[in-house]
Amino acid sequence: MTSEKVIGRLSLYRRLLKSQQALGQSHIYSHDLASLAGNTAAQVRRDLMGIGFSGSPARGYDIGSLIEAICRFLDPPVPQPIVLVGLGNLGRALLAYFPRRRPHLTIVGAFDVDPAKVGRVVMGCRCYAWEDMERIVSETGVEVAVLAVPASEAPAAAIRLVRAGVRGLLNFAPAPLPVPEHVHVENIDLTMSLEKVAFFARRGSAAVAG
Amino acid sequence: MTSEKVIGRLSLYRRLLKSQQALGQSHIYSHDLASLAGNTAAQVRRDLMGIGFSGSPARGYDIGSLIEAICRFLDPPVPQPIVLVGLGNLGRALLAYFPRRRPHLTIVGAFDVDPAKVGRVVMGCRCYAWEDMERIVSETGVEVAVLAVPASEAPAAAIRLVRAGVRGLLNFAPAPLPVPEHVHVENIDLTMSLEKVAFFARRGSAAVAG
DNA sequence: GCCTGTGAAGCTATTCACAGCT
DNA sequence: AGCTGTGAATAGCTTCACAGGC
Image 1: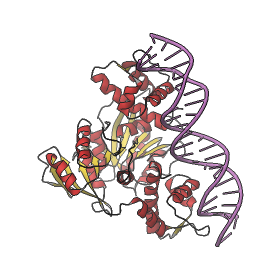
Image 2 (image 1 turned 60 degrees about the vertical axis):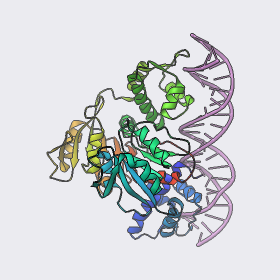
Image 3 (image 1 turned 180 degrees about the vertical axis):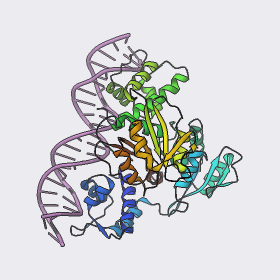
Image 4 (image 1 turned 90 degrees about the vertical axis):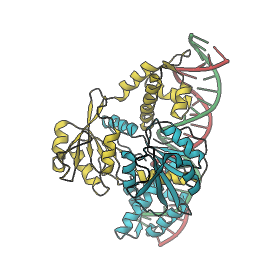
C-alpha cells in the first residue's frame, strides 16, 4: 500500500481535481475522476482508501477537502528546495516548464559546467559554478535534484550530489546512476519512450504510463 | 508476454549493449547486463527468452547478435517518420535531444500555432503551418507524433492527429488525451515525476521507472 | 437507484530454484 | 564451478462484486 504508482496517481488526481474545482464543481464521483484520470472507479476508490479519505455515497467526494487531504499526504511539511543540474536545451526547457514559485517545490538554483553561464540568471533561475555544487547543495539542505546533463556526465554528477546530501534524483540522462540504496531515482528516458510509442503504434491496444 | 515494460527494457538493453560493444566487449552475462540495467539476472534472461534469443552457458550472450535480435524485434521494418507538435521551449529541447538522423525513427517536421515560426527551420527541422497538420501527416503516412503543446491545446491536437492517421502519441502535456482504443499514448508527466521524487526523497528505499 | 468501502478473486510481473550444459 | 533456460512460486497491482448507506 502506498507504492510508487499510487503516489503518481495521487499527484495526477490532485491536478485534475484542481481543474474541476476551477470549473466550479464541488463534488465528484469516483467514476468521473477515473474517467478524467484514464483509469477505473475501483482504482480511484482504492487509492483514496489508501490515504484514509472518505466520500459520501450521496455526493461522492468533496473536491476541496480531497485536494487538502492529498496535499497533506504528498507535500513536504516544509517547502522543499530543488536544484537543476545542467543548463542545456533540456535544462532551460524544464525551467520554463516548472512554475517559478510553486507552493512546495521550488527550483532554487542551477549548475552548469560552462563558465559562461555561471553567475547569469537563466529563466529566472541563477546559475552557480560547477565546483560549488557540493557546498551550495549541502549548505541549503537541498535533497532533490533534477539531472539534465549529458549521459557521460550524469554518473559523476549523481555521486557528487548524493555526497552532498541529495536523496532524490529526477534523471533525464540515459545512463544508470550509481547511487546507494536510500536514494530514489526517477528515470525519464526519452529515447526509450519514443521507441516504445513507435513499437506499439504498429500494434493494436492502448496504454498509459506515468 | 511482450508487455509494455518488456519493450522498454529491451530498448534499454540495446543501448547498454551498444555502449559495451563500443568498449570492446563481445559477450556479456545476464548478471552483468542486469547490473547495468539496474534489474536482476533472472529478469534479463526472461526478457531475452521472450524474443527467442539464446546465449551460451560458457560465454553468456553474444553482444553483436543480441543487438541485432533486439533491432529485428523492436524496429519497424521500414523507417518510421515522426512529427513534433509544438515548438516551444520543450519542443526545441526535444529536437536538440533526439539525434537528427537516427536509423529508424526520424522527426520529419514540426508544427506550431505561431505563424512567425512557420516556414522556418528550427534545430534542423522545418516548421509547417498549424492548419496543414492533417494534410501533411496523412500524406506522408506519419503514424507517431510527439505532443509538446500546452495542456489546453493537447486534446484538440491529439484528435486532429488521430483523424489524420496517427496511432501513437508521446504526450508531454499534463492532460488526458481523448483518443480511441487503438491509439497508444505514452504520457510523460514532468510535474508528476518531480512530485514523486520529492515524496520518496523523504522516505527510504530506491526505485527505477521508465 | 446509484453511490462508497472493501474482502476476495484475478492478473501481471518478478523472482526462485533447479535441471541441463560446458 | 558458473552459466543459461524455464516451470513453479511469489509478490504486487487491478478489478470484481457485494454489503451498507443515502
